[in-house]
Length: 197
Length: 160
Ligand SMILES: Nc1nc2c(ncn2[C@@H]2O[C@H](COP(=O)(O)OP(=O)(O)O)[C@@H](O)[C@H]2O)c(=O)[nH]1
Ligand SMILES: [Mg+2]
Image: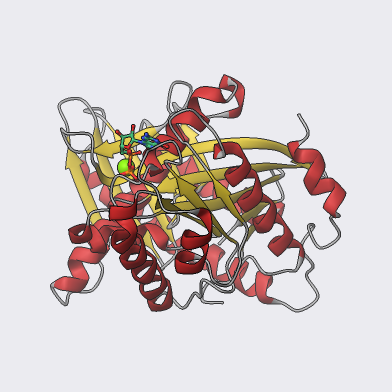
């Protein structure tokens, strides 16, 4: 749920990167962080285990510029992907304005992608949200690796309703900003419609 | 949708800021801030020069969400108050109503007893301000300033 502040003339929106463990969610945020001007970003926070697996969430506040005199600020979050962190994932979805589903393109991760997407739907439904109504973008990550599924296969499996989608290599930044811009755009468009609930 | 849009107007903001400013003084606190449950900073006061309040806000909300999750598992109501004691700084976290979180950071110049007392009064005041705000937001005919934005406005945001 976005937060409009008439006094500081700011609009704050929350975007969550969802997906199976190790698909590249944290890498997306790290790339965005590294490529953003210092004045447009806050500190990136990672609550991670000693082996750098996301424990609770990563958080990156970003300022994208002004619309009609309002500064647009996006709070990017990632969820921990491991199955046993489901309770944490639910918490992070609270108040979400837009979702990016990051899929791992490797063939042997397709089951994990499908499971994570179902988990996303379930957890959103528990909060009274529906993926079909939320601003939502799909990213097929790790396109650089050798044994990946084809784009057509991934679309059929993970994006049958043809939401906006991108191929990506988060480690080198391919598709990372395209994904962010697309979801930010959908969130702002939703605000115009007076949604943003 | 489940949650109505969170909006802050000048009138309510000034009321909230007044409560927060007063709380800093009356509780001898270093810093007081208010965060909404989604992690967005609403107001702050005190020694905030070198404070990364955006990060603190997000972590506070994460903390409240996590203890709220624990409470649910224990079939407990939400834990409305939390206190963390450090060597120099202490942090007192209070849930106000169901939507916002009041955080007080203080050191040896104050005491937990004093902070508790002042927080209690401040939360009652804040609660009524936020209830009023919620009613106002839900009044019909209050259009979002974004109702009129164009595709071009949105595209321009990304053309740099
Ligand atoms: N080859 C390749 N590796 C990637 C890509 N994106 C992420 N990785 C690697 O995959 C691992 C897990 O990434 P991470 O962002 O921590 O995954 P998360 O669990 O979704 O947060 C790391 O070693 C990354 O460097 C990619 O596009 N290509
Ligand atoms: Mg991660």
